[in-house]
Image 1: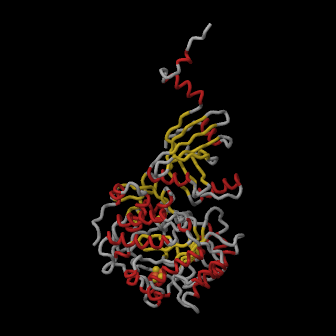
Image 2 (image 1 turned 180 degrees about the vertical axis):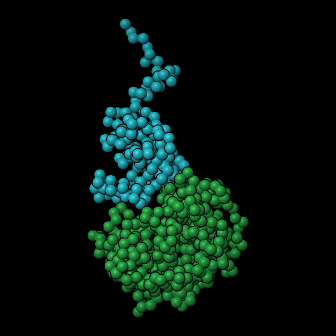
Image 3 (image 1 turned 45 degrees about the vertical axis):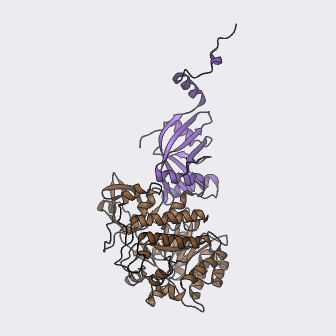
Length: 157
Length: 406
Ligand code: SF4
């Protein structure tokens, strides 16, 4: 697998204070977005999502994605207001065994006596910085023709 | 008459809305698998589960007992039988990954089941625990009675190979309560592994009333297990004989049991009478259905189901005459049960060499795809929750696998 994330992004994703959302679709194409605190990056550079609730819409949609090779979108917003958009494909649902148990203990340590349904491994396809300041500069450079004219009026003396 | 069969790869292409993972699973069960040398060299008996003793299976070799796909779907199948009724799928190694292959084409990565910590330990009287309680990835399987009274009377179900399995092994007919107690106590020490306890075994017809001895035996086993939990009820399933109302209430009220199944095996009275002569003589098709309906009153909707050995209804010479008819009649009858709140779950008929039907051939892959899709649609239509027998519990029902996405 190609390494997609640099160290800064890995640190941002693995920071417990970062906001993380995942968008998935179901078999009818209906989107679903939800906050997932349990998203992290593992030592292989893959995204790990620990799904607590077996019957959650995200869990069902991730099954749909792995079955039919559909992408999911993840967005993270760090405490420094830097934001990254990641597209990924779920490649594995770990539901039992020693690897699963490793995350089971981790989740219980973090959240107390809660259950764990599935450890999802999501392979990132690409990542893009979406921080507003950066996007504004990009937009100006790439699409100079798109602008409200009043924004470029000469200042009146 | 069987339909002309199309290949696995073409079936996946023909049914783009059905999970390819589940189509692969069905075919691997229907045709069996064969491990290459390289695939066997990936087996580590310290990590993987290679031994199993259940009422229907005995294996202590180097073969993995089952496979898992990337999505968590289990494939419970076996190294191909000597009979080779069909060409098996191949398990091989490519780029260090274990893969499943058909006609030279890699279909998916596969993983071998990991064995639980208790497996190599022994009970207080020195019985290896794997011989007492069998493990699925998240489920503890106990078969307290390892033979079946129907076979003692030569009235066993014609697809069933348990009599042959039993006679070839050295296993006792009944498990000892202390062995069950020791094994369950040990198994529950492994945190994050098990989510369910499952009880089943051959039918015990004796007792004051038909099946009373079986009910009493299961109550005892459930008490042994239940003492470990702080809640009265614990995630569990009993696949037993079709009990009467009093027996159902007794077992529900006096134990921690949460869900119940009694298998109808074939969804047609005439075929049932032929294929399951013992069940037909002791209970009868219509009465079995009535007992399942009663079970819904006792256990609740979503906590009762019945299993079918999908494909046996096509056995020769008295099975359905065409696959179209088999599909139509099976789903028609399944709907009647589901309407009442009894879920119908299917197993793929793997022609067992120890069974009376050992010379038969299972139907085409498409037959299975249409039936499991039909069952999944019906389950959705009648809003039946599949928790009690989903991919995390039994892992042997392709139709409940399909229900993962709704
Ligand atoms: S009831 Fe039928 S399927 Fe079950 S063990 Fe007895 S003979 Fe086999």
